[in-house]
Image 1: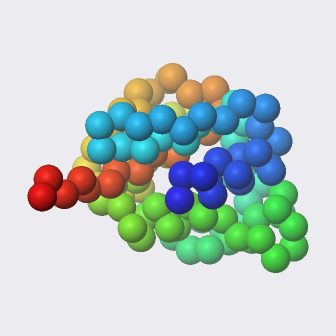
Image 2: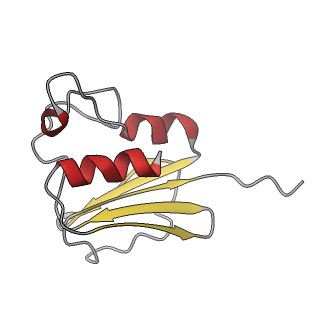
Length: 108
């Protein structure tokens, strides 16, 4: 999921994209807000992703579906999409867009 979301950021014009792991959180961050031109809410359903072509869709809904927590942030602030914590996301620390999702690690 992280690589698909990172690919969106590149298609959306990012010069810098990173994927990091912070405990149980996977964080995708880019220097631009790649979802700025997307119509609809990519965290609630598949939406058309114009930067990827006429038939491309966003992937953020996959993080919502398959993880226990999701948070996104832009320069305007952070928004918890799923769960009850912003995890590693700190307000005011994002210059473009960040999407973080929590994956439960089975200790067995």
